[in-house]
Length: 126
Image (cartoon, rainbow, N blue to C red):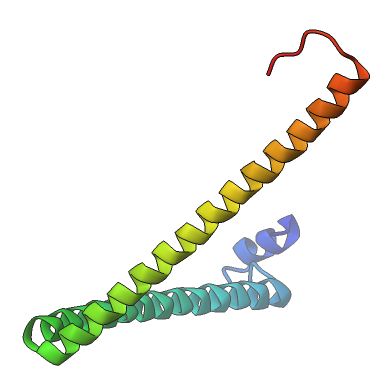
């Protein structure tokens, strides 16, 4: 706030406003932005809470259905068994690939060792 405007506001007993129109508009805009941000945050929090509640209720419904419906239980158990079998098959593929890689590296090392033995005969560890 400027010194002249402040002095005028005090001297005229409030007839002259202590802040300019530009300052008042900026202050009003800032308040509106804060209110909008607060409303958006509140809406986001309410939406997140509703989503969590809906997910919890859906989980409880699935659990209840699993406990009471034998057809659904068989479907879920079969699905879980298939996922486990797929996971085990993937693990077996990875293990086989690692084994083949180790064999290939051992063959390469042995061939390199043989070349070096021929080039520099001497005391070689096996």
